Image (cartoon, rainbow, N blue to C red; front, side, top):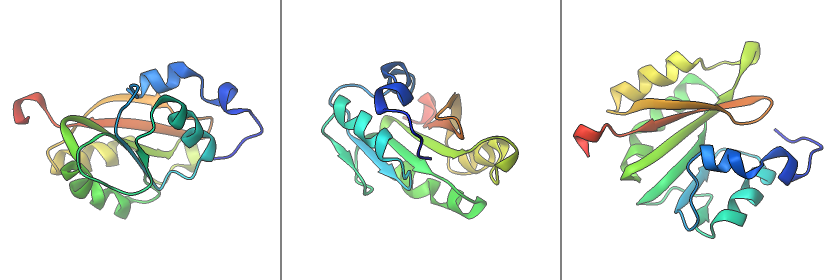
Length: 135
């Protein structure tokens, strides 16, 4: 997911706003191999981990194949009740995982999809949350 653009050009603050990254948020970035994205996150909050940890406000999870979606149950256990999981996947014709695959897997884990964003030129992200009635 690397590009020749500087982080400020590639990830302007509005993207971080769309992703719900608030100053001081507790984040985990799992399997998203994009150092420029991590740099932008670090400008917003110092609580960014490469490992899963409890009570995350937001988890960014890079899913490369359908089996990766089996991890949603574990991810769900590590977000706060009002937290979110962003599943980052390849978009377009090269996509191995379709948006509907993520939605189906999310429903099995008691999660709902509420938003999709263009994460980068090559990737999109789908936001999953615990339904309000289950918090």
